[in-house]
Length: 388
Image (cartoon, rainbow, N blue to C red; front, side, top):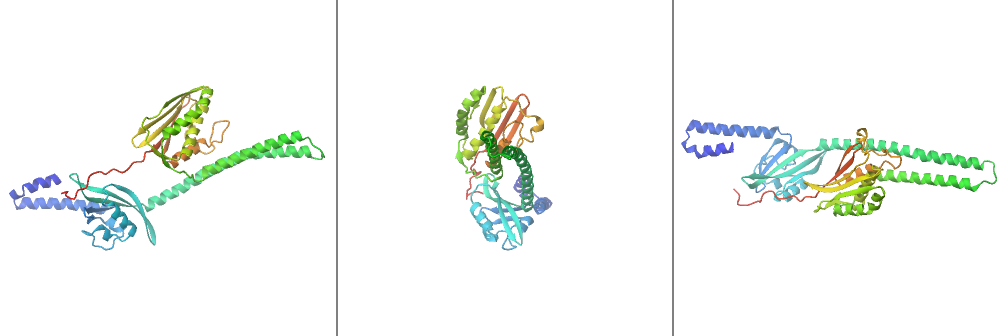
C-alpha cells in the first residue's frame, strides 16, 4: 500500500477529480481496516513517536493501562500513565533503543491484575522513529500456571512420600526383628552372651544409619535448593571430575573419549551442585557397563546454549522405563536410593537448563544437558535525531 501511495502522489497533479476521490477512498478503506484490526485485538497496542508522544492506542490498551485522562493522542506517555512503577519503566526504557520483553507489573484496585509489557523499536526505512508497546493481561495465565505447579508439586510429593515410606519399611522391619532376637536372648536370663547381643546391635546401628540416609536424601529432594550462581567454566569442572574418575574407569575396564569445546563460554552455575549432577551421571554410566565399555563426554555450543553429552555403551534403558527414570525412588539396580537422576533433574532445572535422554537396549545411553549462555541484549538499529 505504501508503494502504491508513493506512486500515486508522484502522479497526483495529472489526476482528475474522480481519480483523486478513488485514491482518498482507498486510503480511507485501508485506514479503516487498520483501525478494525487494532480494535479487535485482545492485547493492547500503543505506538509512540521519537519524543514519546502517543500516536496510536487501541481500546484494549486503554482498558488495561491506568491512564490519567481519556485524551491520549499527542500526549507524552510519561504524563499519560497514572501508575508510578509503570511510568518509571517507560521513562527508563523508551530511549534505551533495545527491545524490552515481557516485564510484568501487578496492578491492584480491588481486583489484582498482572500485565506483561514489551517495548520494541518502531522502524521506518532503517531508522527508529518511535516505539511499539505491547500489553498483555497475563492474570489468568499466571493463575493457571500456579494451579498447575501446585498440582505437580502435590503429585510429586505424593510419589516421593510413598517412596520414602517404602524405603523406611525395610530397615524398620529389620530393627524390629533384631530387637525381638535380643529380647528372646535376654528372656529369663541373669547373664547373656554379649557376642550375640553385639551382633544384633551392630545390625541395628547399620539400619539406623540407613534410615538417616533416607531422611537426608528426602530432605535434599524436597527442600528449595540454595544455589549460588556465578559465571564459571563448565569444561574445567568436567576435566576435574574426569581426572578424579580415571582410576575407577580403569578398574571397570572402561575407556574414556572426551571432546570438550575449545572456546567454552562461561555459564551461570553453582560448582558444588554442578559437580554433583555430572558425577551422578558418570556413576550411572559406569554402572551401566559392568563388563566394561566406552564412556563418551562432549561439550558443544549450539546457538545460545552450551550442551554437555555423557554417553555409554552399556545395557541401555527399556522404552517402558524412559518416562520413569526421573521419578524419585525409581531404580532398576539392586543397590542405591533411586534418587540419583531425580537430583540431577532438580539441579539442571535450578540452572535453567534442560535434560534429554536417548537410549537403546543393548547399545547404550546418551544424556544431554543444555544450559543457557547468558546474552547481553544487542542494539538493533542506531537512533538518530536527524531521521526522517
